[in-house]
Every structure is written in C-alpha cells, then in structure tokens.
Amino acid sequence: MTAVAPGGMVTQGRAARTREALIGAAAADMDANGFDGATLSAISAAARVSMGALTFHFSSKRALAEGVVEQASAITRARTAVAVAGQSSPLPAAIALLQCLADLLDESVVVRAAAVLARERPEAVPGWHQAWVPTLRRLLREADKVGELDQGARPVAVTTLVVYLLTAVEVYRGSPIGEGLGAKGALSRLLPFVWRGVVTKGT
Image (cartoon, rainbow, N blue to C red):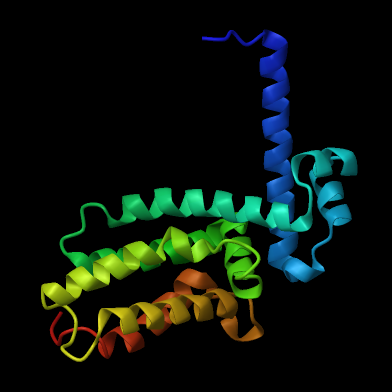
C-alpha cells in the first residue's frame, strides 16, 4: 500500500471541499436560472473560488452540470432506498418513494437542480431520473403482479404517468400558483387524483 504524506491528505481535502463548493454553487444557480441562465463567473463568485480553480475541477458548464446530477443521483438513491425498505407491499413502497422524492425537492438544491437539468438538458446531461425511475418501474410491476393495480392499468403506462406527475410537482412548487405548498404539499394534493384511476378499488 502506498503511503500518503500528510501534505497530500491536506491537498486532497482542500480539493474535495472546493469541488463540493462548486457543485453547491452550480446547483443554486441552475435551480434559479436554468442551465442556459447559469454562468461560470457567477458560480465561481458564489463558491468563492477562482475561475482557474473552477476550470481545473470542471472543464465546462456541462461538466459542472454532470457533477450536480451525479451528486443528486447519489443522494436520491440513498434516501429512496431507506424510504422503500420495510414497506408492507409494492404499492405503499412506490408511494413512499414518491414522497421521499418530493421531500428531496423541497430540501435539496442539488436535487432540484438535477430535476431542472432533467427537463432542460436530457440529451446533454445524464438524467437524474435514472436514480429512481428503475425502482419505481420495478415496484409497479410487482404491484401489478400482486393485484394492487387496476386490471386496465399497465405498469409501464403508470410509471410514465407518475414521472409526468413528479415533473409537474417540481415545476408547480416554484410557480405563482404553487400557493407555497412546496413539492410535498403539491404531491399530496395531486397524487390522490392520479392514484384513484390506477389502483385496485379498496387498496
């Protein structure tokens, strides 16, 4: 095993902190202004990092956006895994997954920025959706197998509908008609209307 000199550890720690600050600043700018409205100069100033240091860690705004999505995806996978674990059956687990995502949209600027990037730059930036849609798809397939979905509700279609719903919630939370509900409040208001049409009666 190669030993790491104390000075090297300090340098690595400083680099990690700089990278973290840049991702946080980029997320805040992209959440507020979208990918096109965010600027490297504003991100550099907000992170209190020189442009030289920024471009050392991230060669472009796209690279920064990828860093934001990567961190948001890691947060999302960890939190949703905890939310889904221990649920009584697939349908409650799917609901817990959605509620967790809504909480993250309210709490985490990095997750909100990733959701914005998923809408605005789906081809250029690997999607945040990949952190949770496969789990949602699996849970809905399992719910269908155990009879928790209505006979006419196909899991693939329900997955698509739920993705649309969460996108609407993410947009709605920041709009003038959002009434200050936040993502969690908006989801609680809208989800019953969607669920009523796809779950087995009495579920």
